[in-house]
Image 1 (spheres, rainbow, N blue to C red):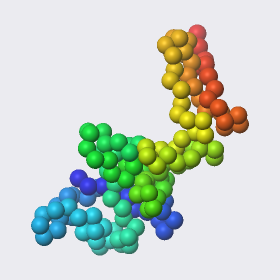
Image 2 (image 1 turned 90 degrees about the vertical axis):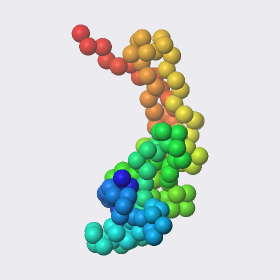
Image 3 (image 1 turned 30 degrees about the vertical axis):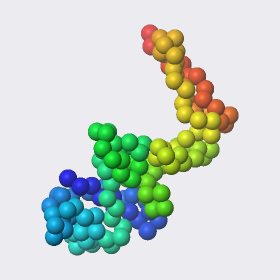
Image 4 (image 1 turned 90 degrees about the horizontal axis):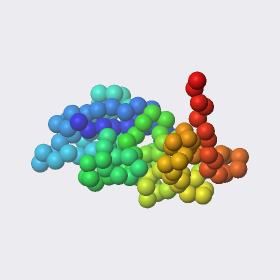
Length: 145
């Protein structure tokens, strides 16, 4: 199955559809995105240039089966299509975060979330982003009695 994102004129993902691979084959039996776009335009009454192929197996610019990553992330409703970088971006989690093009994800201004230590895990603590202080703070999960 091939997956296509239906995007708005503002490049926001509105829907993701599957398409039989046979519906996008050229005369040499090679998958061709533009043929898939034509098919989707014809059967969904949405302009072909607003259908963008996406990979179900790509997240954070890595293919989950060690294949070739495709367009940064599998598109989801509310994601944004970045035509210049050929990446589907999830919604920005915090205003201070910026795009990391290499890994196709948003990154805090001070880098990735620190790893929890075994002691933190034992104490039911983890790091959570604090937008006010632009820092990773330690949060303790409430203990249930």
